[in-house]
Image (cartoon, rainbow, N blue to C red):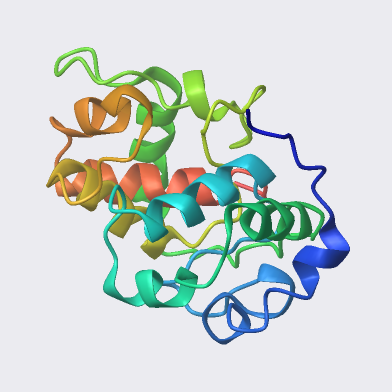
Length: 191
């Protein structure tokens, strides 16, 4: 019988020293290829740590980083990062056309290819109404989102619920992936 663990952010804070190098103080990564963890859903973070430790989310870098993290520690780490405030992303003002396409795809999907609207799961403001393993996208690095979506498309990442992302992304072009990545990242900024 599994015993539910009460997540403790203070314990989590004591476990994140190795995370800071890539994910930044308080989970605000300054490196576009590394995700911001601040403000992310606690259960989502705990699941990703578990998936890195197992084999359902392959990453040579992360496998080494999470090797000594227990399931209980992952719960505490998730609680810590969930309580942090994510910094706003600086908007790239040269991306007006990209953002327009991203808005269209995020809000309406692409009926011609059967792509669902992103907001259906990720929320109108980039934050899901209910978290069923769905990450918060607002203020996430666009480059990280692009890389992640391409991994889903190329089946290099398959740890999503019922392979939903893999199916949705399958028909998206690189241009559409870039557009929706920038748009979803900027949702909390002045568009």
